[in-house]
Image (tube, rainbow, N blue to C red; front, side, top):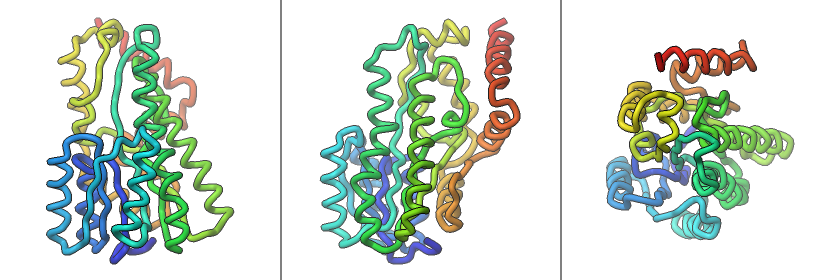
Length: 279
């Protein structure tokens, strides 16, 4: 997809952050939109209102991406409302921090339900329609933490590693099929979204970091340096050049380089740094 004029894009997690910024950037380029969010319907409608100022057709739906039936219904409704769909952006995500020992199975199920199964549900529901359109693209949002792991983030790391593996396998299948559809895995570093403030943090994190919940969140917020608008522009450009991966932010590129340089040794560096930080 070299241009987006008169195309149709479906975006999850569109009420704020990267989802909202991407919706507005695509609308500015003449792309019609089917927007979804599980929470904050008012914010979702605000995104739609901003996008409509660019003269495109925008529809909205409340969708919990962890629920396969809701995603399938949304895909069908998107086709009814827009007659076609060219782009699915599986962007919705949640965050959880906690040690393996202290975390409940329910914590893992919650994170995987949204971050991984949401991507699978969105891809499966929309892919046949993308193929039917004759020109389509799947964009799945992983994370820099889909490249390397860190302590107290096993649920989040697992989900984002899974998204990367799923998308890279999908991309190869689409290359072989040559059916007019491609796929890109997006790996953002610290983007200024509300995922940190809305995430869940177990008290067990303080055993590793030495910080309380508020301090841990504040420290994480300081790492969020890339704007959602810059992230959206990087994604759009990645689609246009048919990139297999889109690394967003200096921290994402640094993390990618660290993992390539020290595929095992980075773990020792991280644990050493965290020990020193607790002193």
